[in-house]
Length: 316
Image (cartoon, rainbow, N blue to C red):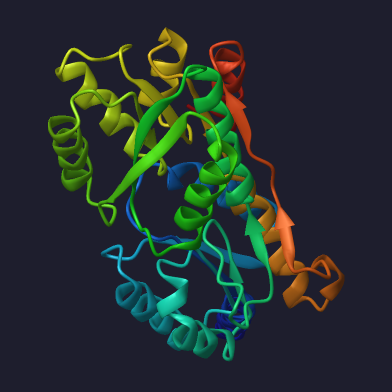
């Protein structure tokens, strides 16, 4: 009897050891975003789908405590110290972070998404062409204001590539037309400041014709301020991304249209690509190191179909 008990204990111990060893063998891959925003919940749904298909990995989506390059860098340093195997990051300020990003990329495979850092040793960028997205925003403005007009833009992180490229893309499309982008105001992903920027811009420019929300939460703040001021429908709104307030405005016709990305695919395809890369398949990285996931324009004609598809993906 004692021998049987001892044998059972031995077998249980061996099974526990095997389970622990398997758990320890799981590699961790992290998706580091640029700041707190509901926009990233869509990307998180993509990461969850990838997790179901990658049982041998532990996938994490991490938010920095603040939308600042130094804070984001500390978070990535902590992940490297904890043994993470690969990181995908939306770089807060790539121009001032080259050295720090190269340091991370020298320790683990580093990929970028949303906001690229092409002058670093990152392996590949997986995300939208922000220049093309900006051009689409310009096309929306031209269509909505055939007689021209003056626009003010609002953005979170003006130093990030996604912001700079969207603004430049829009400017290149409206160049030579009667539509102008006369100012862009930044908020560092501070929701209170984002709304105040719109209020201040409206007070300083009561006859403004158009407002552009370059980040996902900027358009809802524009919508709220104009609604409170009784100017919804009187000032053209050009949006980015798929916040519920933005989609509601598109549906009711108070927002001309919004340029949407596919953050779900960033999370899903990004994690799958990183896993293949870690497994030795370098063919997943294109020669130009860009995996572009197209953006599209959502207007009153396709907003219902788009929202239905979005809800089915995130379980809303």
